[in-house]
Image (cartoon, rainbow, N blue to C red):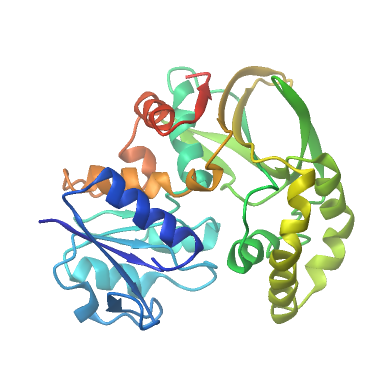
Length: 322
């Protein structure tokens, strides 16, 4: 029997990954790992013990925020003969994880951003656009955790994050505003070419995004401990915003020409279970790796846009443009 170990499997996103793994791969043993006693195996992602990885085929790292160096964990995973997958969204973390030179996979960023964006961008592989703009908006009626909000707020006000914004129309609902956000590298590899890319983040209510734009300079000055406290406080009061929001989350990609005009779009819309969307790519990557020995480095090495669109539809999401 194949075995998958989910580091952080008791956390906010980790629990979702564990549930979806068991749902999708019933013949695979799914274990959790972490520093807490409730986990199946003890594991510190910064100082991994090889014993925790014994007999594991795939290690999924869901321990955020991803502001640490994953090199030792990736090396330990490969040393134990296990493929490595994570759901990181930070460029520095992903770059370090991808440095692994091994016959095993190290698929970093297997989440909505950048992983799912990378896969869906291959829709235009035959004729790569001049530029790609991707946007992610979340429904404020969905639950939130301190770790999730801290990861979201950490770059705000720093390095140009949320210094500019744009409005994007969506069929059937009000247009949503997106603030510039470091969710992607400066380019996406599409059809053998590096295509310049930008990413925006927002909420289902434009007023919430505007507030974040207004306070971005102040948030950028907060020391990390104080920012973590603010994230804890925001998670505590977030249910109060629920009645004013929706559950609808949207991930959209736009292909742009030289003038900035949109020449093509792909959109994923989640009316329910939107917080499962960032968990699914790690599950699909694991499913592919259990059948292959391919030393993948990106989610797009394992999944095609059409197959991914079908998987999203099967999970209950609306997909257009592929």
